[in-house]
View 1 (cartoon, rainbow, N blue to C red):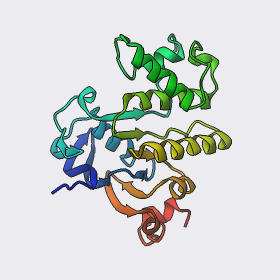
View 2: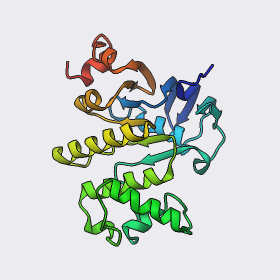
View 3: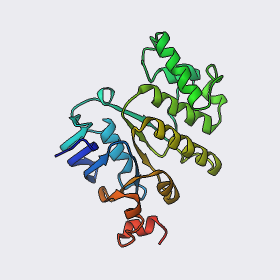
View 4: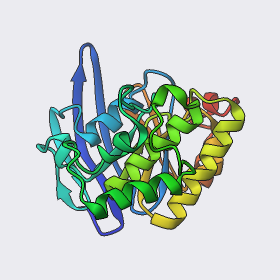
Length: 238
């Protein structure tokens, strides 16, 4: 049974996509950053898509903040999702892109417009409101995606390899920003990463996904001691 310390609970969740079968049974601690690690094609993005509602489970139960959301569409789930490609609309300026996080119809009142401005300032993009995504650097576009997630004010933030397309310097800067925002909000964060150093830096909890299943779920310090699990040993470079 879920308890108040669980942000997300997947109970015997099963899904088949083509020839691949997935089985997820785990709990995500509330208020922590959980790294979702594992080899390419193991099911990490599928797991986040299930939680966000972009994939539909075949069996089992999915709870977020104690509520069964298994049958809810993405718009009705208490989740914000940031993709690797930041998913900004090229023809819309930055203010409008971020405002979509509050109201897809962009009917924003004064308080909501102030929220957008505050979020842009918070991620270091004050003064960029009228800029188009094509005029921004990769790091600036990803900051804008973070701002849009902030204005949604959802308790669960899902990040699908948000730093993968950035150079090492920008990766470090964006990791700094994520840590800072998490300290302020204490939201639950799940972040997919292929980088063991990022796991060590960011995560309090780790899920390791391999061949469509979760082979490890636990505290980050325990994860780095589990070289006896073949997939983890390979991930850590052992």
